[in-house]
Image (cartoon, rainbow, N blue to C red; front, side, top):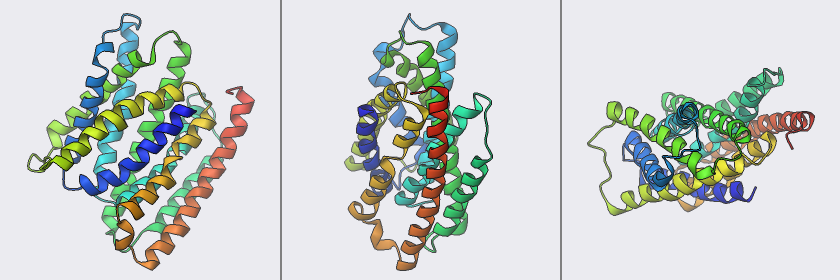
Length: 295
């Protein structure tokens, strides 16, 4: 759990950094570059002989979904939402972690419908006047695709790693990162606006931090910790960074100055509804973990 706690702090800072330093930089370019940095960091482990060729393709597919698709949607969301809302809407990822875990085992409960309704109700309550309606819902939708992608990759990797405990984490992560980088590169080649590239040292420094620290070491430590915890614990740590990230974005990066009192009230009400959905899903996940012996 120490790995997950450390990464939660690293990622909390990233939301505000992206929203403030990289708001004018093409999101697909940033996603590709940070994943390429992470891949280069683990490049020496890419040609492992301990992993079967069939599993290499499977792991790269997991990485394509967890990192490539997730980052492409996540970075694009900053063009539609302020960073504190991007952070808030990532709060639904734990729900997806446990939902996907259950669906992979052909289990389902109607409670998920209630949690989904509460989450959407929270988003409706939060809808602020400062953000155009079209942009708000596009950003919200992008974050849900990102959350689903990240959740699927975590659960799939966790299941694979438990079946293959003898393979070193860094060898597996090199394949995950490579799959993510190749996927992000495909998006970048088709959609990048080449007139919106980094223009100063601050922006290049932010991308370097995101690529090496937040993505490289961060995702490596996160997946290392994910393979050693239950679905309920993993789901809980997915949200550990959210309140801290919102605090960074609002008070350190100054987004609080652009929000009206009415919008702050709506933010509080909507956050409470989304938190209720999270608590409801966590109660289910905790009891399910005990029943299945995942501890």
